[in-house]
Length: 112
Image 1 (spheres, rainbow, N blue to C red):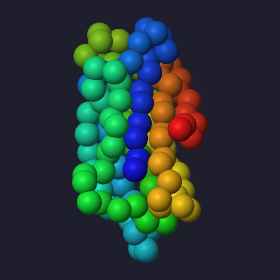
Image 2 (tube, one colour):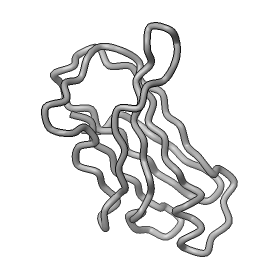
Image 3 (cartoon, rainbow, N blue to C red):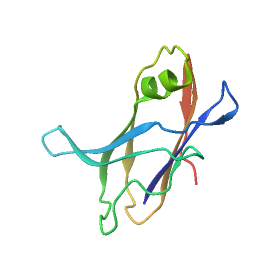
């Protein structure tokens, strides 16, 4: 399972309506789209993968379309897209990828 949560730290609230894409790196070093979604009113996507999709070991990329979100709030931003690359070694684990976001910076970590 891969979940995410986006918090707009400049406003002190969840970032609703952020488009998100999840990709996996193929053996040819190309990215294959696995899933996409949009953060809900709590800034969350509880599970990016559709039912029945199993994780496997590999390198993944999660892409947050932050410009669309900031445009919806009437805020200019410096980072129109945030792309986070991470590695999965234990496919049965839950991987939570939170994003702490502001117009001029962001941070992330492996959540629980």
